[in-house]
Image 1 (tube, rainbow, N blue to C red):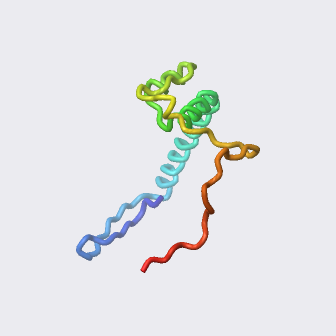
Image 2: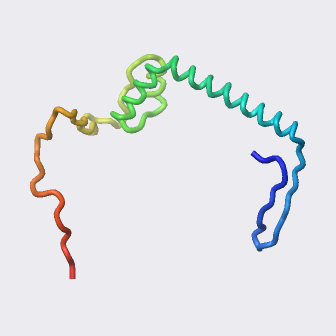
Length: 121
């Protein structure tokens, strides 16, 4: 951060200078206070996440399944319940799950993949 002289170009190309005079001691005090606030809130966020890691994982699973979640689903999760499906959700909306490394696809592609691109005239 800079608390001293700032210089910038004005829209029409003229030079404009703004000067802010702050002592080194004041700049140091500002930096220390900003650091204190950032450190305290980082620790607070980390504590909240660690205390609610189970809810975080349930929320991540719901996002993977439904792609988006609404306030009712979040409320379910925060209350320790499984999230209900969205109101307009059907089982047909559920995308196929990813294959594990030991599984193979049930259907192979009809033709070769890749190869040279065709040319048009």
